[in-house]
Image (cartoon, rainbow, N blue to C red; front, side, top):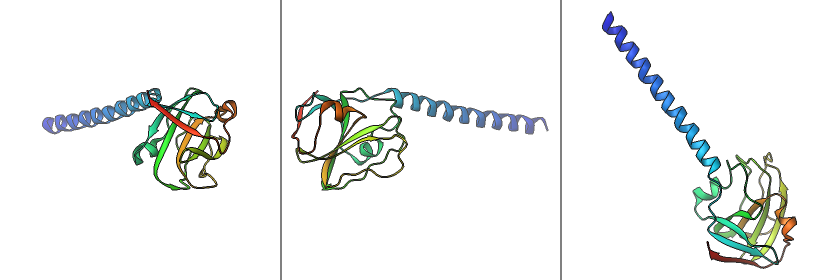
Length: 159
């Protein structure tokens, strides 16, 4: 009876330790993920706009994660999504904590723009024409920078 009790206590303690480990690990991951911010790799200039530091999403995993989970980005920062082919690639606001402006880029030209997409928007976002790149910016950046359809896009040196 005493051995059985010790075995049950050990199993309960072990189970509690495993649960605690996973809870603490998940909490640490969320804190680090949200506070990490962007890691700018290059600068992008659209038309006469000010240079914006961009983090580039090249892989499917990087594109899936996007800006989700970040508290915010600076006004002169963005995330540039590079696709391997031209299409109307759909985007969603999954896990977003702030509103966005979208700039759809075909080659080196602005093909379309969608401004002020709410972090709570549940539909898909895409441009009216096909594109191979998408730039996500903090809401209000497109207007402040004066970005318009048809403008030239320059991806500048790596930072």
